[in-house]
Each structure stands twice: as C-alpha cells, then as structure tokens.
Length: 501
Image 1 (tube, rainbow, N blue to C red):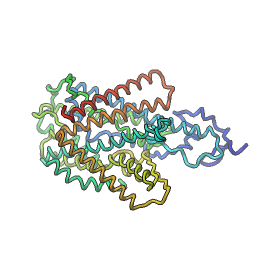
Image 2 (tube, rainbow, N blue to C red; image 1 turned 60 degrees about the vertical axis):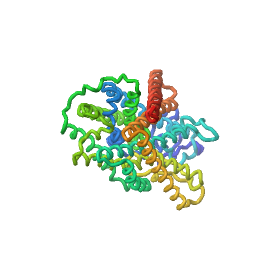
Image 3 (tube, rainbow, N blue to C red; image 1 turned 120 degrees about the horizontal axis):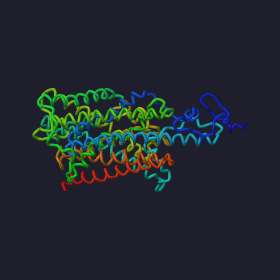
Image 4 (spheres, one colour; image 1 turned 120 degrees about the vertical axis):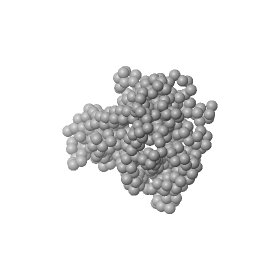
C-alpha cells in the first residue's frame, strides 16, 4: 500500500483502511483516531469546573441584585433572574458545542486527505475570536476579518467596563462606609493598581483566589447577619410585584441581573479545562447545568432575604446593598475585605483585554508576531493562577528587543489603568458615585452581556451545525431577539441616565 494511505496515531502508522471514513465522525462520540489529532490539555474534574464557574458568577454583582429587584418589582425580578440563568446556561452550552464541532470538522478534513503523515502538531482548540473566524471565514475587509475584529473590540470593551465597575464599587463602598472622598480613594488605589497591572505572571497572586472566596462568603453572610442584627425579616409592602413605570428602571434592573450571568468570555477556557471534554461533551453541559442552578438559587435566596430585611430602611435598598449596613467594626471589616478583593481582581479582569492590545502593538511594530492563546485551561476565572503571558504563542520574525517590549508593556498597562481610573472619576463627577456604579453595571450587563452571551452564541452554533431542527431555530431566534431587545433598551436608558436627559 502506498505511504500516503497510512495514518499516524500516537504509536505507529496504521493503514487508513483500518479506520472508518471521516464522514462517520460522531460529535457526541468521536473516535480515538479523531481525538488523537486534537490538542487536549483538560485535566480538571467536573466538580472543579463547577466550582470555577460558580466563583466567576458570584461576586460583586450579587450585591447589586437587591436594588435591581426594586427596579423590576419582586416577581418581575424573580422571573428575570430565572430566565437569564436558563438562557445563559443554554447559550454557554451552545458556545462550547459549536467550538467542538468546528474543531472536529478540521479533524475530519485532515483525516479525509489521508496524508502520508498527519501533522505532528495537534489541531489546537479555539478561542472565542478564533471560533468567530471559523464561523465567518469570508467576512473580510482589506484582508482582515471584521467579525473577529469586532469581537476583539467587544472583549476589550467588556474587560475595561467590568474593571471600571469594580473600581466604582470600591469608591461607592469606601465613600459611604468610611466617609472618604472619592478623589482621595482614587489617589490611594492608583499605585497599587499600576503595580498589580505590571506583574508578568498572576502566579504571584495565587493567594487572591482564597481571598476572593473569603471576601464573597463574608460579604454575603455578613450582609444578612448585619441586617438582621437591627431589623426583622418581613415581606416588603413598598416594592410592587411588577414595576409598571416607563422611566427606564425596569430595563436597567434587568440589565443588572444580566451582568451576573454572562460570563461567556470564559466559557471556552473552562470547557477546554475539563477532563475528557472532547470525548464526552455531555460532561460540560452537565457542569453548566449544575453551576447555573446553584448560581441562580444562591443569588435568588440572597436577594430575596436582603429585600425582606432592608426594604423598609429610610433610604430604601441601596446599591450595592452593603451600603445599607451599619458601621460596626465587623461590618467595616467586611466592606474593606470586599474592596481589597476587587482591588486585586481588577488587573486580572483587565488582562483579558490588555493582552489583545499588547499583542496588536507588538505585531504592528514588528517587535514580535504574537498570537494570543486565550483558550488556555489555566485561565479559568478572573482569579486564575496564570497570566495570559504564560500561554502566549510567539513566533519571532526578527530578534526580540527586550527593552522595547518591556517599555511598551509598561506604557500600555499604565495607559489602561489611567483610562479605567479616569472613566471612573468622570462617571462619579457626572452622575455621582451611586448612580455611576449603577449605570456602568447596567451598560456592561445590557450591551456586552447581550452580545457576547445571548446574540452571538446561537448564531455561531447555527453556523457550526446548519441542520438544526425547526424547534431549535425558533428557540435561537427567540433568544437572539430578546438579546437585541435587551441591548437596545438598556443602552438607550443607560445613556439617557448618563446624559441626565
């Protein structure tokens, strides 16, 4: 038999005729031959992925949910929270499945060619932008894929926006809890943020994962315990079941709830970190189902308890809810712990967008041709142990110039930190610290969350599997329509609020 009719496995060359035709590749049960051609670094158990996903979605945003319920109405908030949990979980599964389908399609093409020797480099898993390129390969202007460029821009926007929201949380909490002026707080946190942003590897910040867990648990428990210390638990009479107001508070509240559930930027890294993800795609779906059920129930319970505790306060429910607490030493410690956790988290959130900016600059100025590998399983959440630099694939077309590269990194990171603090300061000056936090959370949740979480995933899956059923098409159209409606309404009312119109 000619050599080009042999297929190389991990151990030997085997006659291609011994394997089924690639047309028989099954998405749910791919063959061992197919799996041998695809990069697989997943080593996290299902329980680990579940925990990582919950950690990504339960955090500072949870403390805005009680206020969001005052905007949507209690029943309206419950329905919205459950709906978004179901929708976000479903589109997370769609996004992960579409990536697997495109990767297996590449594998099918490779096997169908019956090459003499299959490439020694395995087919890599795809990042979110790379998945967009596979779905829309011909969407080009002047040789550049504009769909990929759009997605990169959205990731940068979301990365910066979430960072601004976290800074505003810090400003709002410390301003109300300790009476510190927001300008003074910005001055104090500037140097730490810049130093943290310059760290090359987040392995040095491994301890912040534990800090984050402790801070969130202390915040949730401390808020309820602190509230019950001076109040009673009773169903509120001053918050309607549904808010019929036309002032834009309902879509703004819905966008705040949406902010928590759209963690789709981290979907593919989490899926690819799962052990046996390609061989058993049902496992990631199971992890999503478990995670989002826990996330939904935890946030729902916390929010309803807080509404029942704080609704009768003289100033009503505030945003974030920790501002309703008294100023005892224990509760002040909770406030400080939450702010300290977010201070360490901001550079990690920013890293997702920052690496895109740095890579583009390095490539444009010929210092290095950098290809980002944001799909690394090590980037499981914003409190991961590794920075994106640890998994950047580098192909040098000329010798690297270390001092230029490092200087560029310092300038880019300093500019981004300055941009975040400037936006936060401007938002406070324009709308006040309380309204600014609410506006940014609504904008990111409604705009970025809708696009990355509700609109794009169904489209990508449809592109990966054109033979979906009529029922699936109807569901996809419904989700995308809701996404566009949410994007349009929340963006309009948020901008209107920012403009004081």
